[in-house]
Image 1 (spheres, rainbow, N blue to C red):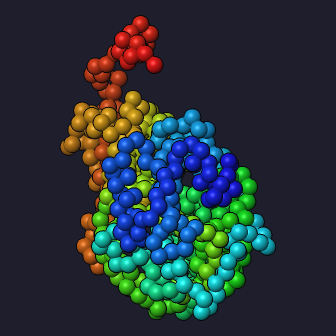
Image 2: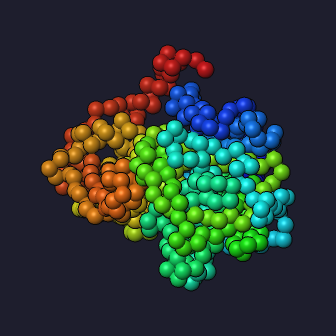
Image 3: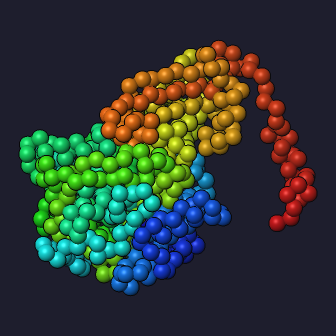
Length: 479
């Protein structure tokens, strides 16, 4: 890796012109609205955005949005060649990398930058950091968006972290929402069923690779620390939390440590989510009583502003999710997968496309079914489309052309009912615990006569190559 911690990463991002600095923006809606405008209306690849000189906060306190939301910054984060320029190339490289990963457990160290400052007890004040209010209808300020919620299983002793949202109630209490079925929720429930407090650490500034691991489906029982260490090729350095004993990233920027007590609930939400809606409304959720706050000098608060796609982290979600689904397809025995893309319009979850080279009857349906229900693809999915190998799954126009021209609605669409969803699903009414369904669309040439299917009207590779060689300057102009 070209970097050790977030600060090294920022220096590298600035070298490749992938960082934009903005001074003087307010925490109350302005930072969120600026980020939205850059990602919806900006020209070219959106940069990472570092806000500083935030009114009302000490000079040096900063917030970072959009860390991994470009091919260049994803390649930097994961140690890939800088020549990678497209989402699908990233997916292919990521998928090849995770096939080789051997988990490496974290290494405990006695000291680290995160221990430069420690506030305990009465000194705790989470609002000493420039916590933003992201969207106009949010129920409050959210310190946990691009974060790691770190918990330990009380039975199996493995450490999980996930990107679950955290809303500030006061200087010492924050509510945290975890969707049903997520590993952090399963661990928390074990403590609560025994009427025991659940120890929690909340890291809200860290190596962007840890955030990528946090926001995606790592296998049950495998710690994200081990996964990230395997990806880096070396252990993640951690220190032991004073109050909980939970491992905390030694090179993090800001960490809250405390416990959630059974029955201690506060209103959480609404919050503008990755689906593009305030879908989960508000409800009582468990509260973390913050006992210690650790932070570096001049700390950097990492943030993600979800919303109507594209958002400042939706691209990175698509890449990692696509690679994980591809890996799970192969592990399930699905051959000849040529590409996977989880579209940004679906928040990297709800609209997934798989390209295959059909090899036997039922191959397309099999690929679709596994995609819809494998661990990386099951939560809050909606549509799975399977296309032939000549279709780039990341090219929306080509995918829609395949659906329009190769599928037959009466024969090509299947519905799977009572699938895993949750309160973030905008199609589930407020307050209801519901299921959703999956639409499987087979947009491949019919297997029985695929070799006799009508030829595509386009120049052959040989004709294209010969024409380009002769007419390139006339067609495209001289470089």
